[in-house]
Amino acid sequence: KRVMMDLTEISCATMGESDNVMREMKIEKLVLNISAGESGDRVTRAAKVLQQLTDQEPVFSRARYTVRSFGIRRNEKIACHVTVRGDKAKEIISKGLAVKEFELKRRNFSGNGNWGFGISEHIDLGIKYDPNAGIYGMDFYVVMKRAGDRVSKRKLRVGKVGQRQRIGKEESIAWFEKVWNEDFAKVLN
Image 1 (cartoon, rainbow, N blue to C red):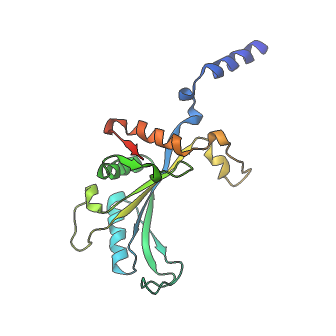
Image 2: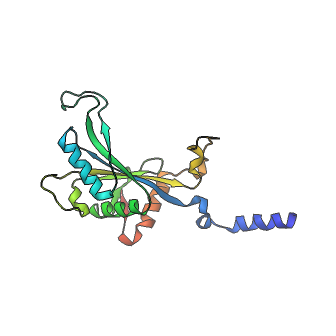
Image 3: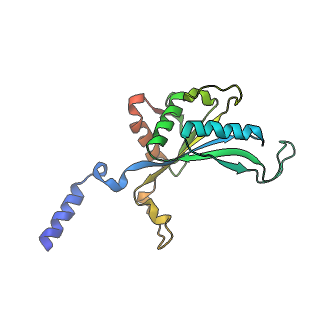
């Protein structure tokens, strides 16, 4: 038994950070948001734009309280968003980063490794311009994760994710530059 245990310890010790599957970072989800700022027809047209882009049904966000100067009332639909996962998310992120020329600033990355950016015109993503719909800007927000993250989110026996397993800002920046390396991705100060 002792010899067998020594062999597993040696193999774990020689295995570097790059070989450790538990340390691998990946995209958990992409959240696309269009804030129309007013209710009615403008929000429904924004929802159609998101549906064209993702082939998913968007969800409407409501105003938390009344702001007279903006002309919105409480519980009025003022924005829509959609959550995309998997390969489709990475494809949409690539389109969005192409609009930004694969350059992000350090302030686009949060302390827990998530990152986001915005574009001012949705037609830059390759969607055909529709004069009835108009032009909308949208926010991209990417949530990163590592294996074992479910421990903190499950219903039974909830645990904490260790400090070493959490994703930091610098790790996320390094991952971003490595993954989109062929497109000369860089993070500016």
